[in-house]
Length: 170
Image (cartoon, rainbow, N blue to C red):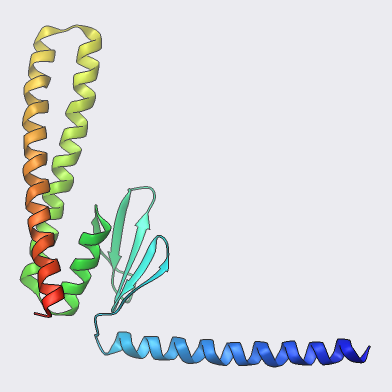
């Protein structure tokens, strides 16, 4: 009986100590966030916090959602790295770079949607054996594919710029 009460007291003390450490860590983390430092840390495998921005993966839209401290959605990004570098650019007040990342991601998303659309239409035109639709959708599909390649290249260039500026501390 006595061993049980001693063990219970020890467990209680350990829980108290751990809660104190956790409270201290959370307090310090929020202080770092308030100072606008560029701290990026994962919360879960599908959630990050970058400064005052929250980055979460949206399963329904298959996109990374960047929201501010008040959970107001700013934008849905296709790639995790674009979302993170956007948040970092906003924290460092590199608004031109953040705007460029936002624009390139929007162009990429629309090009990707167009590519998927014409891919599906080309498949249905192939099944129906309609030569006119087949020729039309082959041309549209090739145009959408080249547009998507250009969008990917532009987004990659912008990401490389963001990585360079982040590493160099500019």
